Amino acid sequence: MDNATIKLKIMQRLNKLASFDYDNLHDWQIVEAFNKASVDWPRRQLHGTNLSKTGDEQSKRRIDDLQVLLRKYPLDMKKEDCYFGSIEWPEDYFEYKRVSFKGKTDCCERNKFVLYLVEEGNIDVLLNDSLRSPDFKWGQALVTLANNTVKIWTNNEFDVKDAVFHYYKQPTRVEWLGVSNPYTGVASTVEVESEFKDDIVELLIDETVKILAGDTEYGSAHQIADKSVESNN
Image (tube, rainbow, N blue to C red; front, side, top):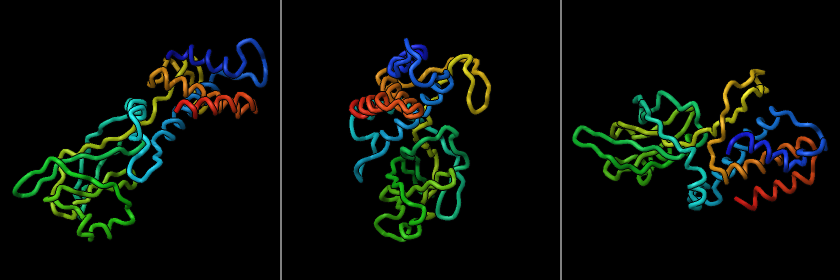
């Protein structure tokens, strides 16, 4: 959906197409609210409601809605005591999905591993747990995230190669040609549209209206938009 259509829909839902009700909105306010909505909405979808699945896995709709944000990032790993740590981190990181890698010992190589994302604070306990500690034979290892670093824990049993970080990236921030960025004061020289498909943009429009209505104390529009966003998830 192009930015002009997004603006038209937002103004329509705020009852500003043919009136001067409430506060007048500047274009930069609409862009800022839409970009906030583009972060708030995915965060809610990625939040799981059970212990075994995250929100993005709870339905085919979730998978389809969020797949546009999935990325792969090859990791350059450095060996440390008991683990291999990544040297770099993707700048557009949003949320963890999984890590894949190949394990290697002096005698052989293994392509498939089951990695368990665990707490950094519990790693000493887990490394000494015979059922959960890294094991080349059983094809399992532990992974933690700390200080923008991916750590693959091997307990010095094997080496890590060809590691890949699978993650959700930050949603692309939309830009309107000629509209100033409120944080830098610099006017955009390009038109950047939302990467989400049109039905998701409709939800983001409602989310944007909810934000703007709250900012301008437009109670009825806030309630309508809030109900529309939640009922269509």
